[in-house]
Image 1 (cartoon, rainbow, N blue to C red):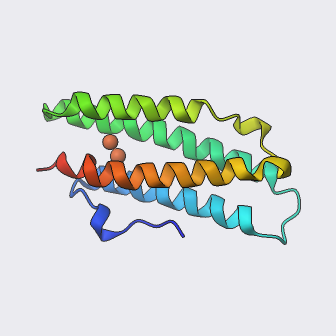
Image 2: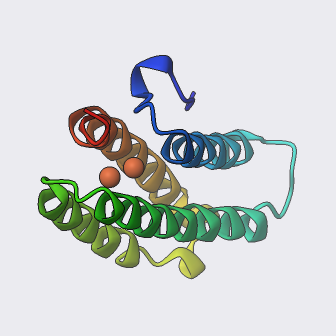
Length: 129
Ligand SMILES: [Fe+2]
Ligand SMILES: [Fe+2]
């Protein structure tokens, strides 16, 4: 469902590797959420969602450090987008997720991956230009 594609590559290895990990965690979460044979999976799902959130925030920090290191001209626009998304991630009550709020998982995965793809294609790919 969620995977890194060639068209998302920025050409900056460290950034591409982190984007790949983000898609992997999203996919792992999606697979677990849809697995009907695992009882009590919500503890693990909450762990994965925290991992996804923490990794995304760490990635933004790393990417911003990289942009600073090369004096990237459009860094400010990127930082604003990252900040808006950080706030969106902070707004989810991950610890409150259980089977009754399954839809929150879908919302996070759907929103995160769509945002990520769009942001990578529209913004991150330009960093190396
Ligand atoms: Fe970015
Ligand atoms: Fe990125």
